[in-house]
Image (cartoon, rainbow, N blue to C red; front, side, top):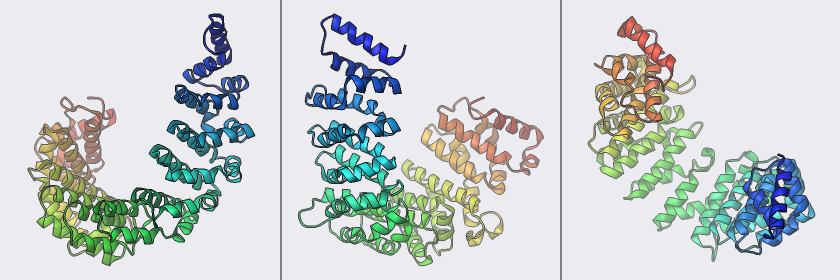
Length: 491
């Protein structure tokens, strides 16, 4: 039956039984059952927004009323919902909701306005009514859920056509006041800087407006302060900035990391590694400085510091641009050799981090395109030092991939093997290990989707090379092709 009729029957039955308020009963039923355009219209005809808003005064009903409200207007994301919320009644409800003491109401109203912002009519109404400015004020709300919802709404709005002008025009002052100054709490300042960094990456118009603020200067101050937690938070925010807008700060991060101990140096180097990986053309001097620092730490660090440094190497080598930049540096070979040695470490977190770095580098090596400089020593046709290290570990990696009782180690080893087998020389080295093909295709002990998929990817990469047939023989090659054709989940 059509939901509106069904709701009416429910309400009529409760009225006959002398039950609760029929309007509240209808709201409860609507919040419980799936909504359709017809049921939404029927509800709003029977229970207008003003009546729903009055129910918010009862704290026992708040959560359910909020669910009903969001469904009734389609989260503000469709034409019907935008029309309802941009009406005078809708505007009044949103204004009252933003002042409501319950965080559920505040979050609901902000999310409804987020939906509205995707519509040019909705965004224009939010600007003209002053509600967008009110969302900006909510950034400093003591209720973290409301403040986070406000930040997400503004990022969403800024990404719409004309959104940058709307957000910076209405909210720029609120964000600026959060980024530091007398009486500004540290957590509020970090919230404002993080929002600015998120806006920075939305496009050139947002980036231009962000450059005109003092966000970068405030980040520089935090990086130089004595509070390690604030420094780490500042680095996380800095990593959100587009590479071209933070290149001047990266050398400072690397220099600072060399004079510190604990978790902060790795945090600084990780930010620098991400920069190298994603900058279109990272300066050679920055890549050399980072590579030298990672090389030094890999030779001297132990346990968690070593794990963190390997994670930095993994981040830098995760893209073709990052690997290309690092491979031109003097310390590159030392980094690769140290990474290979760590794969055999008895310390499990170190081993896992090393396998991630090695698989990232081998994958990036395969994807290097014209215009990007390959590792200088890769002219040997076998990947240079990266290929030698990978092939030298292949027997150990195959053993881990097929026999380790630790699922995480098996997955990590399979990722290394898969990346190695992207290269013909790596695939040949792999299939020459006794039991490699049979062990990878044996699914009896493969528990979990990830293991099955990684096993399948290894064999798929192997058979992508025509020359493999000559190495393994036609019978084994046919079995491998059949395994690939069946897919990862069929034995």
